[in-house]
Length: 121
Image (spheres, rainbow, N blue to C red):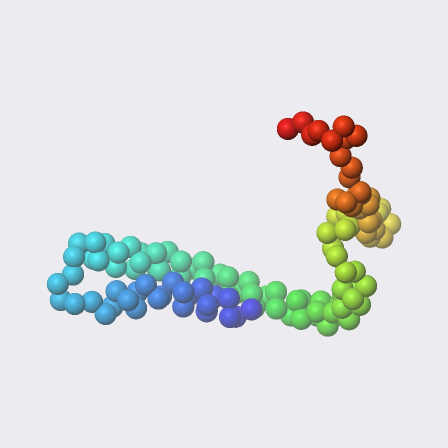
């Protein structure tokens, strides 16, 4: 989880690296871009620190979930070939979860043209 804030910071710093390699004769556009990115970084810094703290809090719970539910989810993934063939899950009042298969649609080759051979468009 620590990789997300670090990756976000690295992506945000790429334009600053390009701006840092400037010649002595910078244009007003380059100066404006440099100021914009510096302001953006100063605004993003508290949010990135908060995101890093949140990631540190959530990491143990995610690890526990993956350890406990990983084998069951793996078995479920092996049993279901096409998730688009199922309705969204329904949670019953007793906590059971139902996965209903969508009704079968007729195959495209099962559709027939009108008897007179003409199709209205």
